[in-house]
Amino acid sequence: MKWPALLFLGLFLISCQKPIEIDQEHCSTRASTHDIITQYLAKKDSLLPIDFQAPLNPLHLQADYQILVEALKEANPNLYRYRTRQDLDSLFNAGFCKLREPTTYLEFVQEISKVFNTMACGHSSWSHSAAFQKYRRKEMRFFPLTIIALDQKFYLDQNYSASPNLDRGIEILSINGRSSSQIITKLRQHMYQDGHSSITGEPEISLYFPNAYSNFIAQEDSFELEVLGHDGSRETLTVAAETKAHIDSLQTLHNRRKPNFGIPLRFEIDGEANTAIYTIKWFRKEYMQSYNQDFESFTDSIFKEIKQQNIQNLIIDLRGNHGGWTAYGKFLFSYFIKEPQDFIFKVEFAKTDSFNFAPLIISDQGIVDSMQFQRNAEGLLEWSNYPNARVQPHPEASFDGNVYILLDEESRSCSMAFASMMRSHTNAKFAGGPAGAAQCGSGAMLMSFQLPYTGIGIHTSTAKYSFAVKNPHDAKGILIDYPAQATIEDLLEGRDRDMQMLRSMIRKEP
Image (cartoon, rainbow, N blue to C red; front, top):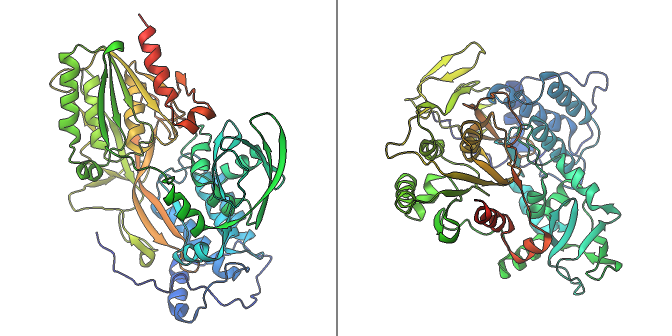
């Protein structure tokens, strides 16, 4: 399915800032998506560039918000999966009405992010407009330290400020009077969420803290820090904000950006513990191919070696695995069952074409002619010839030993499908965690479109995957048998305490 190409060079050119009268008594009045897009296309060439420091035209913000809501209702079958229709529609109405008041671009971003956080479809998200990204890099200033968030506390990781007297690993008790726990609580209201999984959000807060602080806390030129030294002494000091270009350049110089996954498939044997360790960094086919790896042949080879060496313990490390090809999770699962069974119970769509917001779509969901659909009792289009619905036991033989699966908050999508099936249908034990996704299923088949007036990118799942778990309504994350053990010292030094704990425990078990 191909959508007509539209050039959106003007999508980030926002309205002139003339005051517009708003009907204060009828904020629930909604224009149709068709009318909003038609009006935008008629005047987009006359729109002035956005002033990212000033309140924006409220009618245009309401138009963008309305398109977001109507597009999610039209395209995303997961919209009301984890939250009631009443709760979400109440949020939509409140957000729409709130935009009558003076609202800046970043304040609008906060309203958008609340929608995704509340909806809790982990495959749906937003991204800044291209114009804001360019403006942010040149004009804005940011918190000049990278931090590690752990157990509601902040610790200094890297210092990119002009203040030299900051030791790595010291605890940052507060920033401009806001405690670390207050900041974390605020950030969690805007960040990734999937179902009712009980994630802390701390790994993403650690990774994106300067940006997250700017997006959702405040934009400030300096930061008064209350810190707790290694010797237990408290000190207050001030650091100046730095440009994003400055921070990015130092991160690159010190190789402190998020590391590449490296080789996606890794295998080793710990002979002392009679344990095999299979690390799968990503289930994405293209990524494996870039390293000349093939998932099925690699997996077959390691299970042959496990059988030849009579290995009794297997650790499968899925930490940081965002998902990829569902077929790979199904293939791996085939090594742990003795009878055929369902793997994916069903895949459903709200719609597959003729979207009302079609002129705004910049990448479609990937529907192809070979896919067949039938309308089901819930009114959704069910993918009737989905190829990965059923799994057969692997012909070579199943693994009968002890299985331990390592997860964390980045374990999502099809890695969670595999893990959920292992939790539901095998005796596998789980360590690390908590996993970042719901056990009952997830979204998939992403579509991207652009809000016309703000240029904000919207990425929404258009498919609803239901895993064949024993409890099809379990929207919580996987219960962890052996919780994460890492300390701040482990994280600073790059020690894998969770893997060490698991391997040590296996050695001690009879």
